[in-house]
Length: 309
Ligand code: BMA
Image (cartoon, rainbow, N blue to C red; front, side, top):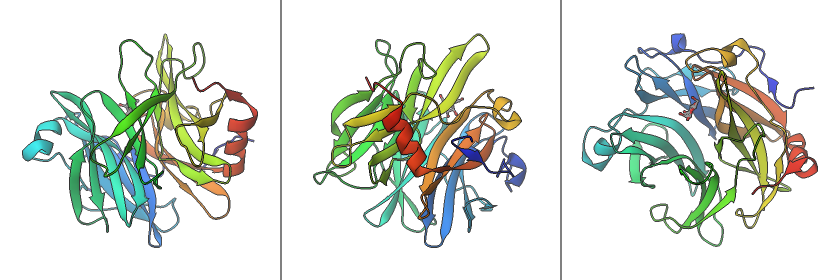
């Protein structure tokens, strides 16, 4: 039995489903909003730069795409400067009555993370650029800890393998108390670099975080997904990291596409029946979904773990 059961009608969205010209639809953040699932996905335009689109669904599997893009690079102000080359890889967190959207903002100055907010998926307010350059994969926890927001992220470094860090903030604007909490493991499926995937969700045993890990081969890099469990009260404490990946590129739409051999997640939706819907981009080209038992993912972290650091 695979840990993540792929939906039999994958891929659930392709560029053909998008009512404006795009080359891909991948790396989507997904959340529940009222009685619907909302998906904010990334698309490469035909010039290689990315924008974000919106789709909604009643069952989490069949999505209807909005006619217009959801977010295109800002044209002026500070966001205009730092989004010049595109916006990518959105993640959604619901907290304090609003949906926070973190995304990678690309420009001639590098990649940094933007934070936008929405209450209704119609009006969107860009709030702040919350990192300097050379950060990606920011996911915000859906609860505060000692009155502070918490986020996981992945800075780039030449000295240290690219690892997962945690930071805290009183207001979502100013972040600090930063600490490296999880590193790649040498000659392991995640040895080259790791990064947060979906925003963590709460389980009885801890916060479950789905992350991606990259292994370099002679045929290019392979992107896979793994799981880690963080302490419920102190998310900087990792209880266990699963030794094995939970998902790797296996289907044709994951092995070949825009970039070969990629499964990359930016969103997961836990359900009341104890399962979680995990969403991932296949080969940076299409959107896919699968389901897993939350308890099974937790057990992977607890029973067959590798060290976090
Ligand atoms: C990463 C990011 C992701 C992408 C992945 C695989 O570095 O750019 O957006 O899915 O590479 O190409």
